[in-house]
Length: 306
Image (cartoon, rainbow, N blue to C red; front, side, top):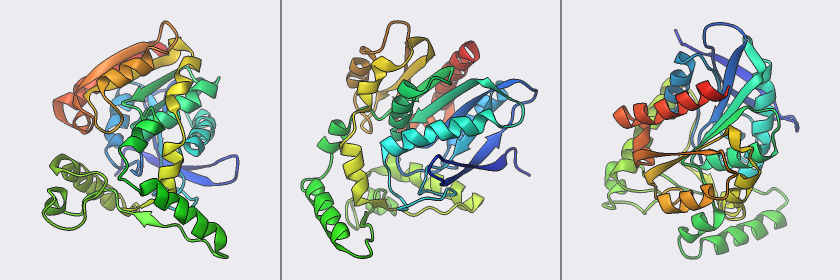
């Protein structure tokens, strides 16, 4: 027996997104809208985050991005932060209709690259009471600086091929290692994300989505790299109402930028926004004592704000 129910909702352009609703006990309750980062699914650890919020008295809607997991939409496995920001608005509308939820007490939460989408959405969204940007994607130029040489050239070549085709098919690359040996560089081609910590993270995540029966493949469209490189979520921070904002940065974060880079982004926020540092590093905050400490900060913030 599960502790959540599956829900679905339509976006403004008619795509069905699906997720899980974790209902806190009571009525007239606040609700936080959440989704995972980059190419990951709702089952990839953030159910743990949702349960922390739910147990504190905040209901939670967790959903898959369009093109991923349980949600419809295509191209499959394509990430576009601007589109994901648009979908946050429709997820907010869906959360406002859920049973027991007070439509005036909604928050949004994003982690990693969904944090970048949440950053954009929060700057344009009048209906939310709070936003938590959890180690967020803050700069496409930062991401592009870490792309392998020649990658963006391949992206433009792929775009030319697709637009010339009568039946365009996206080209894909592999993001995550497929074995511990691959993660160590002992076999196969080097993946974009690599190392033993990365392998432990994705192998554990995959077990969770497989147990839920949610489809996931280790691939990412080439055009996703164009979408990532061409957007600067950090530029939206000054437009977020400061009383609504909690910006969480990791002490070490090779995924979205150094602590100094995140402090510089936060420095552009209006006075009154809040900043917190979590340890030890981006992927490490998903587990154990570090997870509990990071979530305690976020739960306390939401309890004050919504």
